Image 1 (cartoon, rainbow, N blue to C red):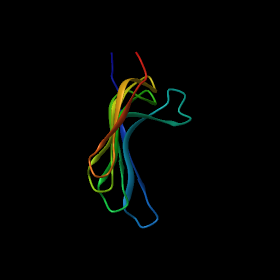
Image 2 (cartoon, helix red, strand yellow; image 1 turned 30 degrees about the vertical axis):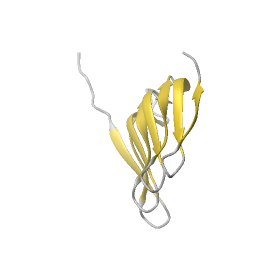
Image 3 (tube, rainbow, N blue to C red; image 1 turned 45 degrees about the vertical axis):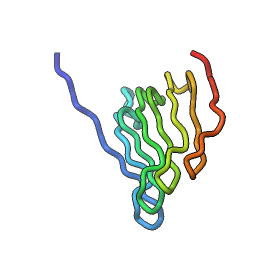
Image 4 (tube, rainbow, N blue to C red; image 1 turned 120 degrees about the vertical axis):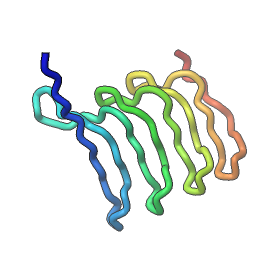
Length: 105
């Protein structure tokens, strides 16, 4: 069996030229579109990480983290096949924790 490595890294810029999104993707089997698959990172325009997580076959899957522009955590939780699951935690920019949301399993 032959395995083809069709993984491609996409970088989408802001108008300023700074990277807005960087993610791994694969071509759909029918060759009509790209599907996010692998690491995904979104950046604030000044360059710090805004969000990071994984895609599996075009859907968020696993641990995801969002960060405020000052680098403090904003949100953290898990996805399963594109749906939030379990407890998601949230923080204000000063680091104060806000109420969590439980999406169940």
